[in-house]
Image 1 (cartoon, helix red, strand yellow):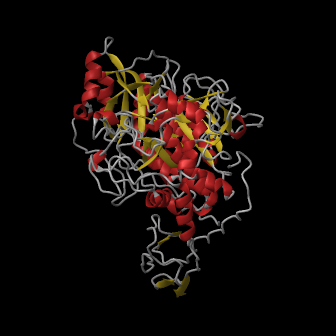
Image 2: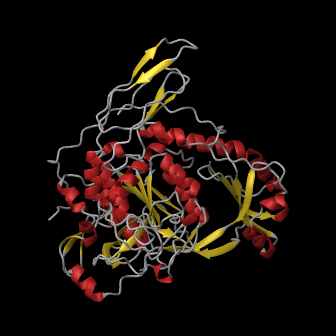
Length: 598
């Protein structure tokens, strides 16, 4: 859905600070989307006997009480959350994304229709969203909000939030900066996670598309321009760049987004000392981006949600009637932003949809480590998100790296990566060394691009990829904020090692066999599915469809160096189609185009 508008002025209800975290195979057909799934994973339906006033959050009440003209902006959030679990079994990348998009869109259209009709009748400006089931209402009165809240589909009324994007801060340790600038070859962070070892194997991220939601990206930077997916196209920015400030084409007036993108996919930069340095973990991956910086210089909740929605289904922002194309979505998206000391579920439904669509997302854990434990910030602090802490070249955790726990005592961060004296790109053909968990998270995003290049069968399998990264991270025993030796609230699972992750993925290669279906194909007669042993042994299930197609699922979370056993099960009779056999790894003779590992 796209904005349907009436001409009204716009005011913001509340303001808080959100910091950019810088201290600077055969396809399986998709099932038809169901807007109202049933069962345990079905929609969360709002109670039918609720006083509309009870649906106003405390923040919304304050916003209306303080509104000078008796109107304010507010969010209507709807209860229905469609079940997206079937997406994981769809092996076609295009069909998987389309299924997630259509399922979410159907749920939003069904639950929002009465509210939209009332807004249209009132002549009120609004924006409807499908990736998060919500409507942003602009300059609405308390009476209108109360009437809308009476709709049984409405879960709550929430205020607007405006987020300030602070200026990035460069590192102040001149000794370390001088030493790093005088070196040649890949940055210390690339070497620390062993990304350059994968380059020698011939894997540099080719064929993988990464994105960030950030302040934008300077697309003209020579270390980034060649990797832009739109480079050389007749309409380069169509489906490749989203901008919340309304300006067309890749741009970045802040620098933060250009720096994080450089760490993911940048080529070579020349330092002030005259040394050529390779800065990008996956230098042959392509990039697209969502610039969430508003014209006023901040990050608003509306801009971040619109950016997250565009990641799921990119569209040509310059078109008169843009049509989303889910096939253009990225494989990996980095988020180097968040609010310290928070477990607010902001954008959690969008992140869940990203995963359902096969998109791996990373989040910076925050830069409030100096304030003690439980400083992790949302969205990273939420259980569903993959959070990244920062460490220095010395091997010590960065003093600013936020410690957990996060939501409901969850260990946060999930993993740690280089985040001190990180050299990367800046607008205007320049570069700089910056500190922050903002700099650590894109190391993980780039590592996933390398891993999915090297192991295509992992592509889209977010949980299996997380398990492999976690299982190969180097443990650091630091339980000052709780946790264990191998998983604690300072380091998470430990230090990222993408080479070890690749080696474990190689060990987990499956030799597959086709299931055999026996029995009489008629209504009421049982059918039996039997599968010869897989190597290594794997647990899997079948999902049977009414039209005769079957979705087969391999385990989503392989256990490192163990062999779980399980008997295949089938739930209703129908002919079966097995999971596609994995492709063999590419030969090691393939070499990266750029940069060259020393």
